[in-house]
Image (tube, rainbow, N blue to C red; front, side, top):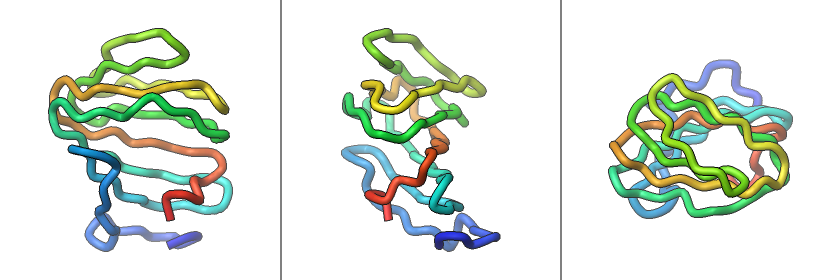
Length: 110
């Protein structure tokens, strides 16, 4: 759905983002991508890094995030900035949804 002006949730494909995580790629272009991740309690986003700048918005739930060795608890309405190649990951403490914005788009997600 690259460069689609309108992307309806019902038309997106749910795929595994790891154990207990459902990923949906939403609207995107080559320069920007929006991705929804739905986490079950206890699910993990393993520590990783990538050459994309990423902003994560906590839509719902509660998560313990680690970014560049620093850990914090985040909840609905909180945001995190992860610059290029910074190591980051999370553990879902209460089931919830994270919305990720990537620059540039994640080619490995499509």
